[in-house]
Amino acid sequence: MIGKISTGKSFRGCIAYCLHDKIQLKNEQVMKDRAEVLMFNKCFGNEKELVQQFNEVRRLNSKLCKPVLHVTLSLSPGENLSKDKLMEMSEHCAKDLGFENNQYIAITHRDTDHQHLHIVANRIGFDKRTVSDSNNYQKMAKYCRKMELKYELKQVLSPRRYLSKEQRNIPRFDQRKELLRNHIQQALKESCNLEQFKVSMNRRGYTIIKGRGISFADEKKVTVKGSELNYSLATIEKILAQQQWSQAQKQSTQVVPALHQDASSNASSFQDNKERIIDVLMKPSMNNQEIDKGFLKQKRKKKRQSQHL
Image (cartoon, rainbow, N blue to C red):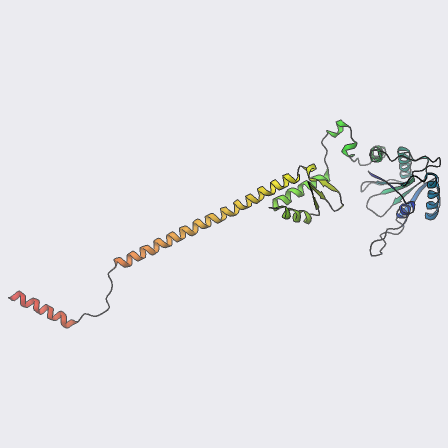
């Protein structure tokens, strides 16, 4: 179970959000009658009457600027509790957070794939005392772990800062961070510089926040520092520099054999041309002009006469 807690200024806005049907930007209704009030504590009536009653008690301590306490309790998908157990859970929450004697309403919503409960409480009591908001997140984490055991719900790890020193040293698996770490590794393999890395991460649904360090925000606006994943800005820049150097080396190894091949091809061609030239030079030249036959006969006659002398 996941619990969220916040404080605010307006009872009207918070109660209206919990009771009204959700409307999309195109004025389309997400679900009709999505809200159901499970219980009233020291208050009653419709939306208008509830807002009026909460504000009347609010005036008992005009110095408090945030009298609204809003709690959201979400079960894991597939888990479902009866209305009686949801009411019990609301009463436990009021007691653990200290507003059991104050005005509050518990409302369940049916517009998501997981069952969840809203509690709107008045931090100001009829005795003018104010419910403290100190350590609210720690109280909420402790309450959720207790409800998980009581109602046999899926157990969720509390934030590390709310654990004891011994529990903080126990290795824990964070599915969100593990997925982000894998996406960073894949993006680094595809990139040679920071711009390419940003494009690759954006394609996977992450927004990069770069300052003195680097952070990653997913589609649900959950931000994780790179240093928490062992991928600080300095580490990422170092890996990208190595990737760029490796890419340059790879390209050079592809170019050098081609140069060698061209050189050997040129040498072979030169050698062939050289051999052909030598063959031409070694062969006797062909004379296509015919020799005068009368000249040859006269030469033979003189040769015979000289032999008879």
